[in-house]
Length: 176
Image 1: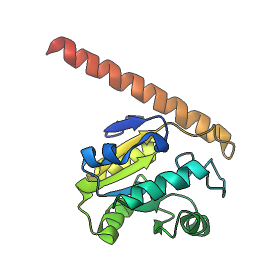
Image 2 (image 1 turned 30 degrees about the vertical axis):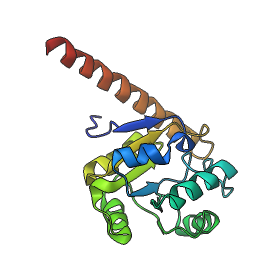
Image 3 (image 1 turned 180 degrees about the vertical axis):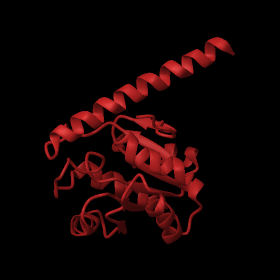
């Protein structure tokens, strides 16, 4: 399967490694965050303390935060409450761009000033890139337990895509 637009503009190990200064340099005035394996461990209802502190830091710097997740409505609502009553869009049906566009409108920012942070290339990154938002990929917090077989295939496709992308970029450098 050929994917286009799946390469992230920025990459970090964890969401908590992204500083307010990083977001400001990217031009982000608002941040959309994925849930599973980005802000919380896959399928969990428990918000890690370091994630909550990160969200508080970002919000206190004047950067708005919204959840955009493919999870069910009630889980996004619950975690949004735990994150300090932040708004959410769920289920978002990523990689479709409707949720990204809706989030920018809800927060009153231009798409190019909305950063979408997530762990998956073929949902989070593609939706951000297709919508014209800032795509930021983080490594998954943990290996997925729910739908483990599905995610094993997804992660393998992501690794292959990144390898192929880097090979193509290296060819471009050699011919330039």
